[in-house]
Every structure is written in structure tokens, then in C-alpha cells.
Image (cartoon, rainbow, N blue to C red; front, side, top):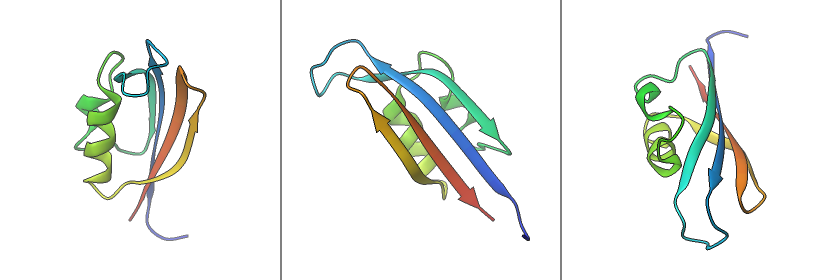
Length: 79
């Protein structure tokens, strides 16, 4: 396989089951690079801001598991 792959996994939580409650990042892991979004992936950061940054920088969301109060999402970027 030629080229490289960047993978970002985000574990998030929300404080309430109210659907519009903001989700925050609990933990994020990166394989490869998350540039230029690395500064949006710290614990306590807004999940929405991180997703918007990743999607705006050629990442594609390939997994979204949502249990209501918590979830995990995986994003990949191919070169």
C-alpha cells in the first residue's frame, strides 16, 4: 500500500441525556498525524469543534458509536 493513513479515535461524553447537550472529549488517540487539528483533541475540549476541524481537513468519519451519555468516533485521512 502506498501513501500513509492518519487515524484519530475520540472517546466523548455528555453530562445529560438531553439531545442537544454539548459533548466533550474524554480521550483522543492519534496514529500518524492529526494536523492541523491536534490542539482540538485535548480532554475537556468540544467534540463538535474537533469533528468540524477533522472533517474540514480531509478526514472521513468511519465509525460513530453513541450510547447516549458517551461514545466513540473514528476518523481516517488517506494520502
